[in-house]
Length: 144
Image (cartoon, rainbow, N blue to C red; front, side):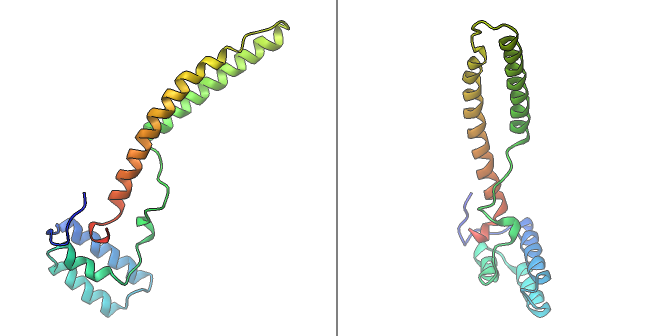
C-alpha cells in the first residue's frame, strides 16, 4: 500500500530506517557524525516525508533491490517437485513397455500435459502474486 509523504510513520518504520542507516554507515557511505545526526532525525521523524529526506543521497540497499528475482512460495516448489517425479515415472514406465513390446504402443503420457498446463497456470499466478508482495515488503515506504 502506497503512503503519501504526510502519512505518519510507525516505530517499525523508524527501526527499519535505523537499520538501513546502520548498513550505510557500515559500508562507509556515512561518516560516524552523519550517521549520528541522521539517526537522531529518524527518532524524531513523524511522517514519511521527514524520513525520506534522510535517504535521498543513499542508494537502495542490496536486499531491497526490486529487480532481484524472488523465490516461489514453498508450496509451489513442492507441487512441482512431486509433479516432475510423477512425469518421470510415467515416462520410464512407458519407455519400458515400448521397448519390451515391439508393436505400436500408444504414447499415453501425453495425457499428462493437461494437468501440467493447469498446474503451470495456477502456480504462475500464485508466484507472480507472491513476487509482488515480496517486492512491496522489501522496499520501505519512504523509498517508493
